[in-house]
Length: 307
Ligand code: NAD
Image: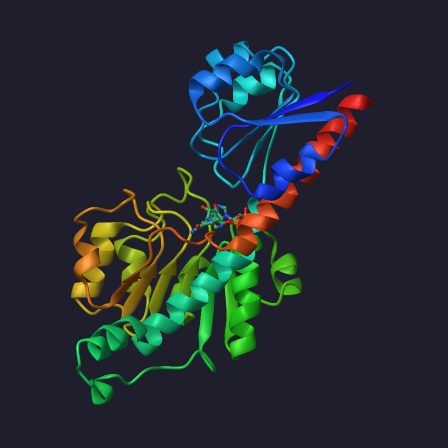
């Protein structure tokens, strides 16, 4: 039986090339809703990113659908409950971006510790501000990781390579597992009290919304640095602004915001804030890994549908 795969959003070229090379597959790019609706009735697999909404209306037209692969992490554009009712398998590829996000975290820590963005901007404006820029080193510090899953553990490995101790808080991972992965398990309060660097790696849920709020920021030491490359909404933006303005923490590195793009969010004007525009997963290496995982996940679903 020939399997029909529809690529609904742009993904790594390798996905198209791979399935084109197989005799028992057809693969097409259908980047707009009309084209997708015309092709979906006999499609077996959909590959989507965040741009395609997979709603009941679309799923009702997909009589032969076996599975959907979300190339990336968030599944909020797919009606998971309805897909489950229709016996459609849904997979994503969260493991692909782990290292890319973790390396960006290191970039944020170094940017805040060494004032790299300010140094660069001043130098390019002709200002030699060497005597204003006394940085700090990661070596010998304590890094606290909130959420010790894939990205948290990779950040742990990287900061350990710099010579930092690692403490970790994770509501759903037992102490033994945290120790096995090289960190000292602590409560959230202990983590905030002990850490020079705090990096947040929990998903955004009802439970984690504003996990970093006024009292958590007050618990941090005055010379702590906070990094959030997980999701906006996990830290309270107003409380963070207050903390920076009152010198309650020394600086912050952010990749994600409650609103994206963050528009005129006053945090962006703070000198001690280093920001990037949600680029955690934006490396060709991560995109290639996503492509390979999309291929692997579709092939696994094909094999399982055969049995
Ligand atoms: P993961 O599921 O492997 O790890 C998340 C960890 O958080 C888990 O160990 C879980 O037990 C823990 N956790 C959940 N709720 C918690 C709570 N209330 N308190 C403490 N710990 C809690 O996920 P991951 O792959 O490490 O990704 C982490 C987050 O990073 C994702 O949810 C996503 O929001 C974000 N992310 C950002 C980018 C980016 O471009 N900046 C890219 C990929 C992922």
